[in-house]
Picture 1: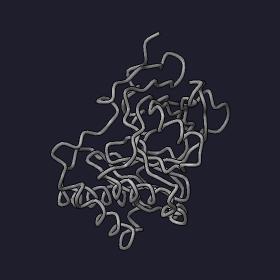
Picture 2: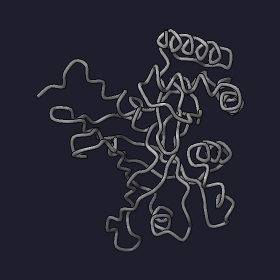
Picture 3: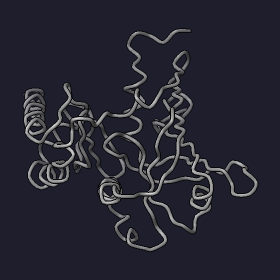
Length: 244
């Protein structure tokens, strides 16, 4: 059975990566190679790849340090039968943070502010999963295998935007919470809430209220701070038009 024309597997996979805050992490047990699965919190890198903060005392961390091959299951957490919702199984390699540690920490703490309490503990470390592919299941006739270039966000040429991201997020949360709420309620159909910005990238803006996350896709790619500001003003105007 062929997927319907309105089915965009790459867009759906990207959305799940951006919106997921928890997932089932599968690693290989040291020594035996047996599969081991655990629940983890996660955030996303600007390119969409998952970020983990895990303890060296945890079994999954010891497994990763011995064999970095992992898989991560993410789902929509929809009400009703969970098998009717979309989910992805992402495969890849988990690598410890290097020169990008500050970026991984900032993005992770934006998604999980409570982790600030233990992020400085010596036994906790940041890891990033480098995907090799993903298997998307979104219902009958909607099962697709995707390559990384199909579901990750390309960052080439967006260096200026990445440099401006931290300041842009702080500015949106300090001065434009009304706009954030308009994006959520008028453009994405969410309920009123304490919506805040957790990150941005060339393809969209990530928002969160508690543990509920939303993804606001941009109609065009943005690659610098000026273009980002213009895009956010434009989208705020569109949202206010919907109010009227």
